[in-house]
Image: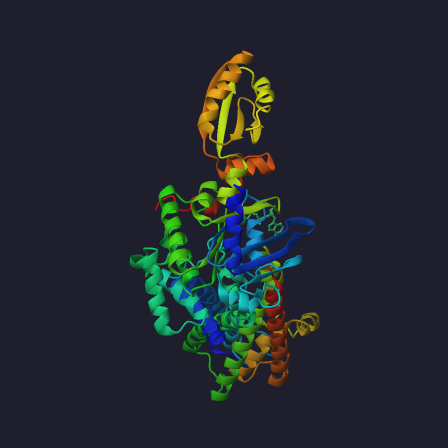
Length: 253
Length: 346
Ligand SMILES: Nc1ncnc2c1ncn2[C@@H]1O[C@H](COP(=O)(O)OP(=O)(O)O)[C@@H](O)[C@H]1O
Ligand SMILES: [Mg+2]
């Protein structure tokens, strides 16, 4: 890859970081929302007992909330291509003598970076609240899953953005697709006790993300072995990035 | 008139064509927005693409700048094909879009810096160019301020500066002064002239403002409903409708026009509700003749005046409609609200 493409990737990444740091309201709301989930659900369900849960509820919940915050933040990055389209900036990028791939890649890196920063902030808070990481290898696996989740969601967001004309469509997708999938992913409560929910979960990519992240972080309380989660999430991630960059590539202004 | 045409033609042969299009066509779901556009723009000239809203100007620019794929036809920029050699085309062009294309969450300087990086300009050159173009458009003092606080005119100037950052061979300007106040427009015209002269940049600009094309362009193509009606230098076009235009209002416009047409010095005419127009040469000398003829017919001339033709007369000549008329009707509706107030508070 030559110099100009690296510059393009860097520019797209840097631009994203600058915008993220300058947009205080976004920073606050993307961190506040997961915190509410952590505190409210955490304290609300503390007394409830879920059958077969090998850890306390807060530990169970923490990876779910981290997944959620990474998902939302990354999806938002992907979809924010719509903003660039609306504000005309996308045209400026598309007439530059750089490949579409570099533009997408830089943006994806930027989105993943900000999502990871948010994920780590939640993780730090969870640790402060008493959640325990099983070990150093577990931390590394956690990071791997966080990155995969971020990339998948950026890819999904990009795909959505190239198909949509406005933000109402995005709201619809969030409310009617992502939220149900998230609730059925065992992010907030175990879904494998009920056969129907378990069957649905098998077809839910978010389930493997949450399960993998939970398994990595806690070293326990997950349903499937980590390699299985990892392979499924990796395949999903590659597919989403592929579809996302393909749609972006094909889209005209 | 004929001599002038051939002379400019022979000059043209020496120059290099830098943009060439061949039956360029774009169809959106069965609607042909741009139809069979064939033209050639020479190195170093300011070429105007003049037409009313919806004529297909932006669509043409988007095809030439590789953002839209033509449905039919071909085009080359500086020898590079816009379909098969997109990267090469992108390297040699600068574009200022009709709609603002800045990142408003970044500062002016950041916008320029990021642009330069994407064009592979090294750090030292980058610094120097940023400094140069910022002072060209008088934005040096505002360089570290977020673009969202800029006025419309300032944004436009920053975009023009950005278009120049990488020294493009051709600069495309899509309605560069749309919605700007008179003072800002004139400043921008001056910048356009200056960069054409100083950097020898070929400029392809679209506009629906007659005065803009008249002031800036060497040659214009008049486009309406997706098709080019005529391409020529402005002087030739104006001569086409007469060196002078005489406007007459009288008690019997119909009668007077039938009689006027018997004069072989009337090159063309237009009849309107309350007045008629004649295209003639040496208009001042024709006024006494017209009054004399009218009196002998017993027609009372209410008013009579001579003026130089404008590009609007040329447009009217080719379409039977006035470009100005369309704009008072449509402009407000077609410009999205967020662009309407651009530059109102410079
Ligand atoms: N993406 C598109 N889809 C459908 N129609 C379009 C699209 N872009 C432009 N048009 C139509 O093509 C015509 C020419 O538009 P445009 O090139 O923007 O005109 P101009 O820039 O001269 O005002 C208009 O009628 C417009 O509605
Ligand atoms: Mg336009």
